[in-house]
Every structure is written in C-alpha cells, then in structure tokens.
Amino acid sequence: MITMKDIILDGHPTLRKIAEVVPLPPSQEDQQTLKDMLQYVQDSQDPEKAEKYGLRSGIGIAAPQINVSKKMIAVRVTDKAGTLYEAALFNPKIISHSMEKAYLTTGEGCLSVETTIPGYVPRYARITVKGYDVDGNEQKLRLKGLPAIVFQHEIDHLNGIMFYDHIDKQKPLAPIEGATPVDR
Image (tube, rainbow, N blue to C red; front, side, top):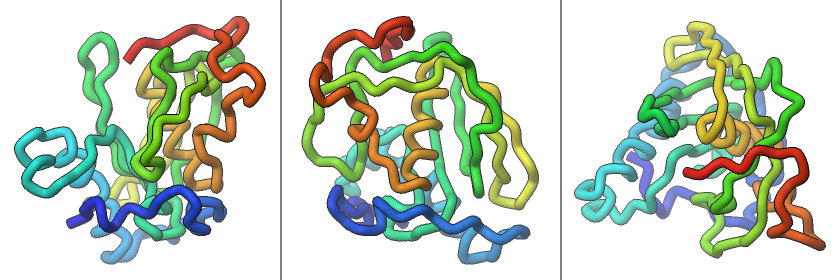
C-alpha cells in the first residue's frame, strides 16, 4: 500500500528525471506498482480511508512521485458531466492534441508539492492518449476538459516536468489568451 510517506516531495532529483519505458509484457513487480498507484488514488478519494491512512486526496499519481523512475500513471477523475475516467497505464503518450488550449481556473496542485503555487497552467484542450493497461493491453483514450488536463499533468511527471514550469512567471494569474477556462 502506498501512503503519504512514499510520496517524494518537490526538490527530490527523481522528479526531474525522464522516466524509463516499462518493458512489455509488464513484470509482476511493475503490475503491482501500477495497481498500488491506482489504489492510492481510489483510497485518497474515500474520506474514511483517507483519514484512516492519512492520505492527501489526489486525482492522479505518476510513478516518479513514489521514487520509481518508470513510465506509469494512475488517474481517477470525474468530468463535468459526471463521467468517471479511471485508468492505470504503462508508457502513456499523447499521440494527438488540439491546437486549442485550456487551463484550470483554480490552478493546479500536486501530491509532491506541499504549497499552493498560484498561476494558470496552459494545457491542450483535447488529447488522445495511448498506453498499456496493467495486463499490457493497448488502450486509447480521447479526453477533454479536466480529464485531459489531469493526464497531461501526470504525463509531464514522466518527463521530469512539474506543473509550475508552465506558469507565466511574470503574469501567473493573467488569463491565457485564446484558452478555455475549465472549472473543476
């Protein structure tokens, strides 16, 4: 079981490394890590379990955040229409994206960043992600709105990029021109 003590914090060198591709078919160890990551996200969203185990609520996690420099992410997020997007993927890649941008009006947060960093993070409004599920089967997901933003945030972790790297340092809270504001 992954707990808060397993999550490394901003400044740890693993968060800035480019993660390694997971060989497929995945090993049992890699499968277990991916399952544990999804379990963390699920448990962190359950108020009773979150309190019992002292978990910070999250909607996504990437393997580098638990000091495993491998291309693995787990996401569990609901869009505006109430549709649940839950995925645990090996080697996720954005294979296409819109030209249109979007950003979260609340800014972004991260399990590895304990402070609030104000600012808008420009993201693609729509993306298609390809990856492999826990059994090594190819998955393709077409995403927009909050789910698209969350997947981009987690995939950034696999490339050593933190969300605040995208924030305009001069005008962090200036609306992003031509981008769609997204409410949680």
